[in-house]
View 1 (cartoon, rainbow, N blue to C red):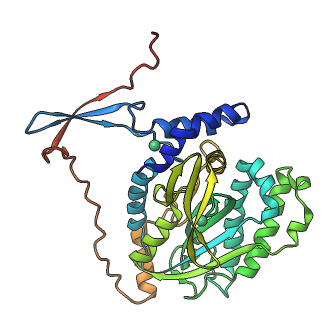
View 2 (cartoon, rainbow, N blue to C red):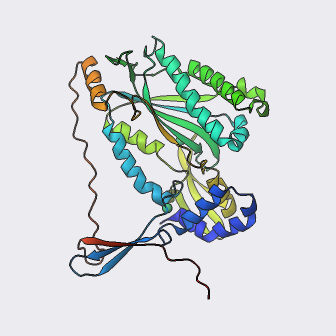
Length: 362
Ligand SMILES: [Zn+2]
Ligand SMILES: [Zn+2]
């Protein structure tokens, strides 16, 4: 069931009527896209059954990155890309959360604040990795993904980092492994990151809008050693490549009330939350990112611009660990040929039908 789409189809126009005059364009576009995803508004692919000659129509999706329908197919492709970059070493998941008292400013200045979150994390992490107690080089590499939501769809901006446990030496000659249990200590990381973030806010001219008490608080940084291998990378990648809510968490849509599952982190249990449809949509739209803002970024040796190939890095890691990295062949997921659901025969692409011109008079 495309539950999120159904919610927008049922209540989206009511929301627009109430708040349309105050909404950013990107929110309106997201509502319109999700409502029309796969209904023909984005064109239709026409196929013909090779045996029966019946025609089969597949409506195109909206492609909006906040649309849960569209995100699912992208997630699989993306995951496959990540698996190709798997390194024969241990991995960490590091999560940096912006404190509650900062969130109003962040929400009103998303581009600057999210940008600073990525940049300051990178600077702080490199600085600490260079320390001999940890890795001894700042030539680290990792994947960072911005999430702006908590389990109840509330505004809760945080950054997840998937980090291979080590770094390249100065002239890329050697792999320097980190400890197995931690990449860097989170306490100094928190102090350095906070100072850098404060500097970035000052530079952006936002410092006076922030309650100074926030700089004295302890910010939440969580580090987990997640072991090595395809399964941990697959798990982590799947974890970070998400949208605010997936269709399968929505349990019911009735009488203007949306019920969905969320995880009670303290009790480690799934619970049901009921929200008024307008409030559900408001919460959902908080997570629409500024236009063109990249929410997933690859740093250092995982960046496609890195001079050293993944194969070369694998070689260096294998050398230092005195092992031959045995790679179980990572299979490309098979793209099943499209079959006609009625007869089970293969389909042949015939043509792309452009969307129909809308609202003809009369
Ligand atoms: Zn879509
Ligand atoms: Zn998250």
